[in-house]
Length: 160
Image (cartoon, rainbow, N blue to C red; front, side, top):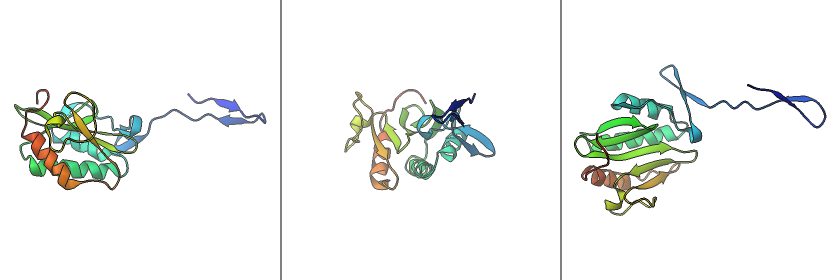
């Protein structure tokens, strides 16, 4: 609900509404959560991941498309799902090895067993997970491909 406040001069001015941003994917509105992260229902398969990528705002959708293509190229047997408003990638019987999430100024790519990768991705303080924040125009395809191949070759996290 929007109400008016009075300015110091006594004139009413409209209060800013508290609505969330929306993206449109295939004619349907997708709510963008904090930082522009698309709210996509939990589901397995390529379709929800592609809906998430399509709803990523601005330059971030290009990062999402490049990541998805890179993963498919180097891990042809990859399984995909959207969980907790983030795309997950894994191998059946091995678990999830990677997920990514949209933030205001970057896309965070998390390797769930990242401490076993060489070199170890720079972000993170958890026991095993490590990540990298991809900002606009800093997509290091060669390094990401190396980490993706290494991560997919190791046991992952959870059950695919």
